[in-house]
Image (cartoon, rainbow, N blue to C red; front, side, top):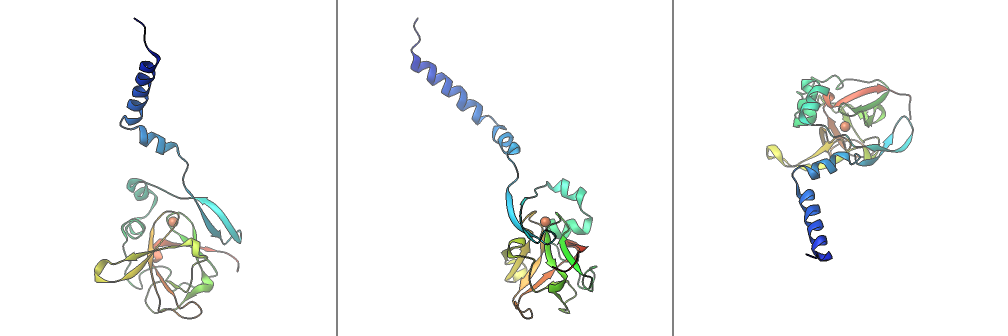
Length: 183
Ligand code: FE
């Protein structure tokens, strides 16, 4: 019996289709793809850099963070007012994300808000924070997230002092202070 070439192509196509549709195939393809790159400002390098976004499972975050850090960064928690280590902190340097180390705020932009949470008028650069509408707890607020690891940092309000009029109200537990010379 003579096999027609178009039958061979149909069979081959069917085999390829079956392999691609096999459970797990897409997950394997995703796993080998490199992490997405984002453009952020580096206080140390005094310029913009490209960096890999950080993605971890819930279990990996639990291992990497303290219980309090996990609750705030990964479960959108809020520390009690005046309880955090940076509410009354005045050293010269940069506050980084406690989850992934991304530069978030400068000590020069920190001000006394009287709220009991570390407050800043601006991030190190617009690219170093991500804002998102938060309508939970019957309030209209703007949540601030780390653009690199998607950790919850706090909220931003428009009742801050000059020059920006912004008040970035952060959780100390979401931050990690590093002493750095002035910009
Ligand atoms: Fe982060």
